[in-house]
Length: 548
Image (cartoon, rainbow, N blue to C red; front, side, top):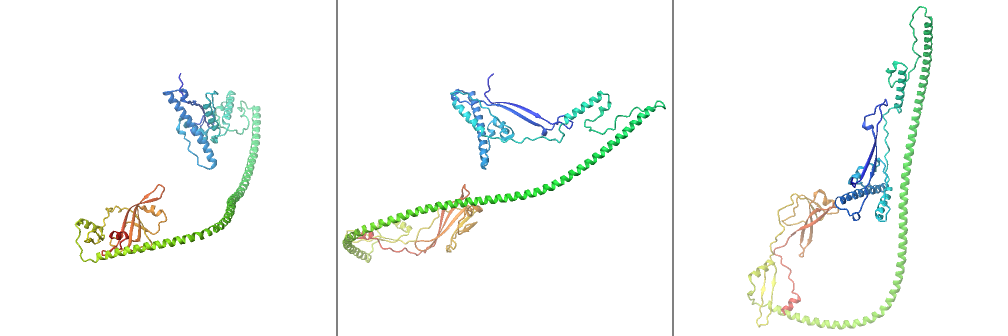
């Protein structure tokens, strides 16, 4: 026969059931049946495919064996970690019993409903050194796992112990009576207890003749013995009743006394236990306070030592800096006198040169201004040049800028071209305009506490909004289903007018329970006079140079 190359399990089960009140029949109640099991498991040995060179079905069988052994080892490691976690007050891990059939079959044994013993077999060969080391480590790890056995439960049906043997002896006595020829023994109940007897049965009292004095005397003697026996039994019964009554009264009195003592002892025990618990609590509090104070004291001492060390270092550095400062002061005082004389002479020379240059520049600028004044005061203004088309003028109007262009050529005749376009400004167009999608959105408006009133016709309108002046809590963004955020900012523009900007964004929840705002739109509200003209500025030096 070929080996199946798998784990082998041999189970032996022992079933124990109690008997009835007569001790004859077995009770057929599953709740009162006790089952014990002994399992003998032969674990298949692990192997390496690199050594065995197995292929096909045998390789798959070896893989299944190795996987089941690895699962068994994992379960034992988890049991050991759970023992360490329980001692440290940590939560236990879930043991993967269901990952293999062998561990799932004996799950109850590892959980404390049985006892597990392991026998490790190794082959002491040099070639098997690595496998033997792994097996020995596994065996050492299993010795560290302790399984808490459950307390066995004893089935108690409330029946008298030893009833089976007593009933057996009672039946033997009945059989003996039957053998002696007593037919009444067959009618006796098995559970009949002991009764009082007044003696043997009546003798034969049939009278054959009037002179049967012997039978009469025997009958009288029997009756006298029976009466005497009855008196003794009654007296014995009265004595036993009195004794039983006295014993019962004593037991009742002792029971009452014991109950009173037990109640008082319980009260004292409770008081002592409460007192002990209070004292233990105070001790723990004082110990924790002492630990905190000791830690604080040690920290303060370390800080004092560190600060003292730093103070000494700073004092040393300060003293060293003072000496270096005195040296540098003496060194640079002499250099300063020499350099000051040298710089004074150089500055006087440069000052004379700069004055000459400035005078020359002022003369050139005066000449240029005189030429510009002559050009502007001339009465003959030629028409627009042909190179300037109406389209360019229209573009300049769209840009809303005034342009003055003057050209001075080398020909005898002076030609001046002047272009003037009024500044009206282009019509504003909002490229982000769309139909309202925020009908069902909830807005959070963030604005100043005292905003400047807007005089514009177009006013910001946010449906279903909530206004805040300070945003310090993340719950303002995440609560009430807020989906939109608007920041209202009011600043002065270049002309000094109030410019209101509305920064809009979407509120996106994050995986951490917070929210982030992604800004995607800016609205600007601004008022401007239609007759306002830009501030005229003087031409720069470069333009004057071009005119010259």
